[in-house]
Length: 27
Image (tube, rainbow, N blue to C red; front, side):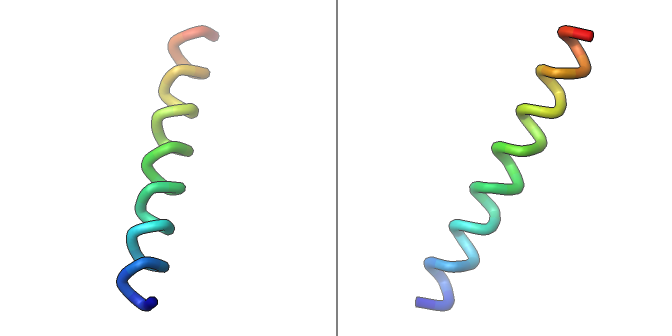
């Protein structure tokens, strides 16, 4: 469960970073 939570957190962080990058490029 701990590993799953860690992986999920990393996935969310990565998605947020990718979204921010795309937003910055679009801007």
